[in-house]
Image 1 (cartoon, chains in turn yellow, red):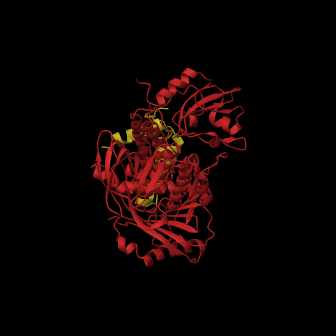
Image 2 (image 1 turned 90 degrees about the vertical axis):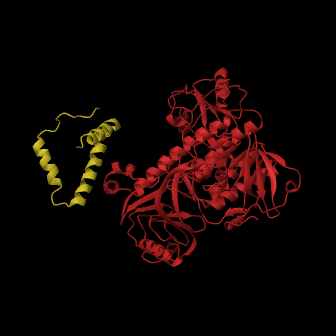
Image 3 (image 1 turned 120 degrees about the vertical axis):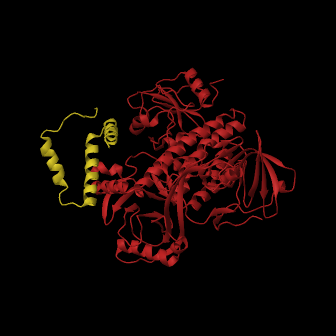
Length: 64
Length: 537
């Protein structure tokens, strides 16, 4: 399983909306905690270590 | 002048003047510096094999204080091989269940040995002085049966000079100094190893900026025999984490993580310690039970090791060679594994049956073990004491999720408890010609299994041997053969997998050298030569 870097989310605007909505009403610390939980949940769902490593790598590279 | 650095819990080898202190300098095959768990286990192993070993210790027994309390199954299996296991298991507190708390709530519980068919439990808790005493008892028993072992108490090594093929040791005693020589010296003199310092050898690694307070308390309490670990404990003054663990004699080990910037002397004030302990115990029982402070100590720790554990005629073992954090019980347990690895090699070299280059395999194999322990121990420490804001955020996210979802529980790390390393791809092992279970592949320590009314461990010796499983007639080889015609289902699952029969070649430390689906004398001979480091010639 290689990391998907082409569009893969149906209704991207809807998803983005839900992501922001999940953080609504949270302060910075609560939001950071939510993000951390989300990353762990998604990482476990993926499971594949090579894909996870590719995602970590892609995230680091994308920093400006 | 031999200074007393600490009180002893048991006087095990009182000072006695020996003739060598006055006469000509005596050369010994093996001198072991330090009579702790590692030095004593090594002396016992060598003595049982008939190789003389002299243990020098600057005290006359086991130091006061529980110190190492958690002895792992592998250590108990080794002690069983050495004839010292039973009293340890009888005296020790057996435990398998651990609970992890975060603040007020329990996150989850775990069972360390969900598998049947082992002689020894996953872990026992036993104060280090008892562990040492039982080893000395076994040495005394071996001596009575003729083992050439000697322990000299209050013999302080003050200098060491090394040559290609021997070392000269200067020793101080209550009756003054004397000199002796040794073909081989094994330094088992602890994390602050004076031998290492005297030889100017480095000991590099990572210092963790944290202080831990140990309070061993004596009380009659009906807490279950489990390991309880708190992240961010809810009771006052407990610091970032806390541990409660039972030992024999109604002693409970309590551990508080205090952080880096503390006033050591103030924190060791008994009143202050009692306030902490009161808060912890009353949080569990609703009131403060009667207890006595038995032993207290503050420790910091490092994860580090020597570059190599062999320097000519001097070998380093245990904490002298490598140091880890206490999380995971990888200190004394790994030191006993060092002794286990070194004993048979030193024995064969002393008897002229193997080249001294075999001792280099001690250094490389145990450095690999030390690296694995340091890695596990560092990771546990990073989880328990997050070093940055984001690592704290992830740590707490793991704990929050672990309470609700099983997936996050394997990420919780309050110490990965000691298991022996597998010497995968090391030169003295192989081949693996059986398509067998991974846990018993070459390089692994023999895992136990039921055999009739006893266990596999009871059938294994402490020399080289063949284990023949499922053969109608046992192979006739120069090596002793343990023949089990009809393996129990658990034994078959652990050693055969789908194979109808298997032949294992096993080292004296009960690590598996090689395995085959059938017996071929020539293949066994080649693997044996390789295990002894003779193949390259």
